Length: 298
Image (cartoon, rainbow, N blue to C red; front, side, top):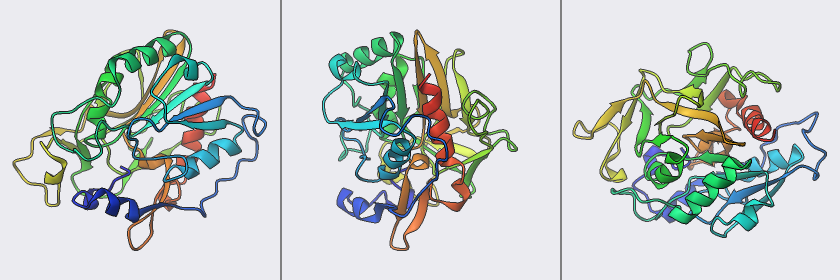
């Protein structure tokens, strides 16, 4: 999760002060997928109260994909076909209906018109990379994900034991598929930081999934989440829910992931703890991101 559990009770201003991009992060790319600057355009959504920006906590995301040859452009316009036609991939990370309201009911960050435009664009050959996170992010993209047959849970997916969240093929929580075992470098493990889970249609392929070590907490208000977790908060067993998946939709493609932190490189808190692609245990996260984008870029 981009916004950490321990900081939920802080103000938005305090949260921003506690999370900064790690400007020292660097991931070498020996053989870029495209000649630098000549790759297709990736359109990055900054029009829906997104908790991240290309100049902020997703600066490493931008730097990595540009080094791989892609062109990135942020957009502060609502979804429209004119802009989408310019791009190969539309990327939306942690869209929010209202960044100041973290309570139920969930409300969509995207209008019905925007959702239909995106659905039709993907069906006609466009590619969508949708990254969401814990409540209220999950609830803000439920309507958009639903048109692709995906049900996003508006909750907090957390390990019951609080241990680091490593998804691996050895544990059976990272699956072999076109993204993790395709033509690019094979991915054996990735690291996450909470987020949420979702169910997918039979036409989708699961990339990573929650196991019995997880529960998804469903508070009426995010401020109720704390350690130890209050017994009165409803919850679902994590097993059976995905937190990463991809699917073909008409002529297009879509990837969805339930946590925004794995594709960032942050320094977190007063101790500047590494979180994201810069974390020592997340040594394959950067290549995982490249594999996702390469699969979409086909």
